[in-house]
Amino acid sequence: MDSAKYDLASQLKVDAPWQRLSPIAILYFVMQIARNALGNIVYLIPIFAYSYSSMREHPLIWLPTIAVLSILLLLGAFWSFQVYRFRLSNKVVEIRSGIFSKKHLNLPFERIQNVKIEQPIYYRVTGFACLQLDTAGSAKQEAKLVALPLMLAEQLKQQILDNTPEHNEAPNSASADGLAEIVQPSSVNNEQIINRRSLADLILHGITNNRIWLFLGGLAPFYDDITGKINQGMMTYGVNFKEMFSLQTHSVMQVGLYALSLTLTIMFILMLFSVIGAIVSFYGYTLSKVEGRYIRRSGLFTKHEVSMPLSRLQLVIQKQDWLDVILKRVNLRLEQINAQVKQPDSSAANSKIIVPSITSQQSQDLIKDMYPNNQLFNIAFLPISGFYLLRYIGYFLLPLFCIFASTTIIKHNWAAAALGLGLFLLSSACIYLRWRRWGVAFDEQYVYIRRGLIGTDYYCFPAYKVQQSQLKQSVMMKKRQLASVKLILASGSVTVPLLSEAMAYKLINSCLYKVESNRISWM
Image 1 (tube, helix red, strand yellow):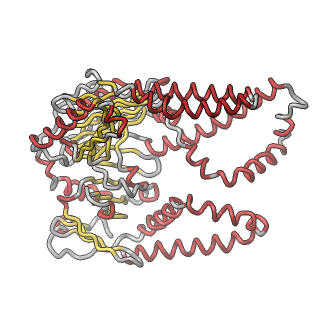
Image 2 (tube, helix red, strand yellow):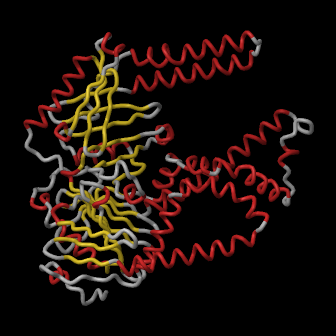
Image 3 (cartoon, rainbow, N blue to C red):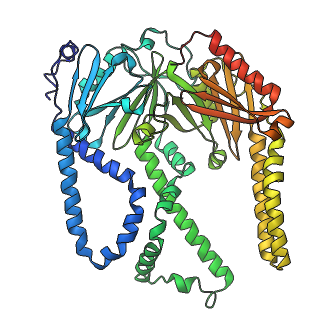
């Protein structure tokens, strides 16, 4: 496709011709097939673990295996490129794709809920990009136009946005104090950057949001081989872990210091991977606002651009883990219509708008910009019932501890009894902290929820966004006139446990009244 000769206006006519992709799209299909295979690697781990020993004995087996897989990968990518066709006709995007399962997607502009531009590193030098179009329906209605000239992708994005209901609405006049900066106007309107993230902020985000432990769980079948290889490699440098941790040649204090040093070293390496991941995902982060629409841009290797109208913002979440408490940072998540709840994938994760590692004041300013009349940080929260402590400590933990303690004391295993007591006290303290954090409040416009353990998470959403409400009561709860409330939004559900029955009904009735009396669309 020649970007210089491509005329978008001519393609928006009725019966426009079908278009083929540029040959550079083959790179995209190669990466997509490889990414899908890696996404299912968890299911392949048992197969790898079973065949690893035989492949280690016969290393030449790897060569034909890798060759066959590479050929299949290239053939699949080339075939996907050959069958892919698209056209833009009469404000409708049509896509034909699929090798074995043929697909024909027909997506009118007005049904598109989210527009996202991606520019992988292998497209930057050639000036191409991918345009992802999401709807509020099934995840199967997601459309992706790949290998478009960047200028065409920008034009098409603007054309789609011009056909959304929000385009003619007046933008929110509130701004985040101290964060606003006017950038150069685009071809249509001015864009206001309301938040940036520096490299230091991304390093903090990587430290406080370390998720590398999930990856380590998948490596469990290979731990013996990995530790063996590491031990052999370290012995070449004169480091013998068996001798280092031997109580016959070292004192208990020395072994303890060695263990502490090794633990800190491993944690540092894992934290380094997490920091690198944060930089790759959020490098060059900016959050912009234009005509009531928020735009997130970020990415080191693949540049992501996610656009979200304010009217489709369902829920604002301010999250704070225990390391965030120490570093005095929070993470702000803007949840929009989630069409991929049951089928999450990497594209769904990249479509979310997250403002990483900001200060509490910056978070308050941003929330004020989105919901000008909210009282999230001023309103008094109603705590949940103390029955929460009785349920989890009195009815669950205490009986287990009594059984365990009785068994260990009868056997005179005082060390195990002391360990059980410590775990019981620690678990009880965590449950108490969780109970202290729970709270709910609402006013004429918004519903506010507070929860957490060490850090405190805050949820805020307009009451008219509620789509379903549920009141749950067990026999024990009904006897005590308690109830749990579950409010379902287009982005997911939020639950508040163990409110008084009167307060639970009051909260649900308030939300339902706002839904019925307000004529504002939840989209």
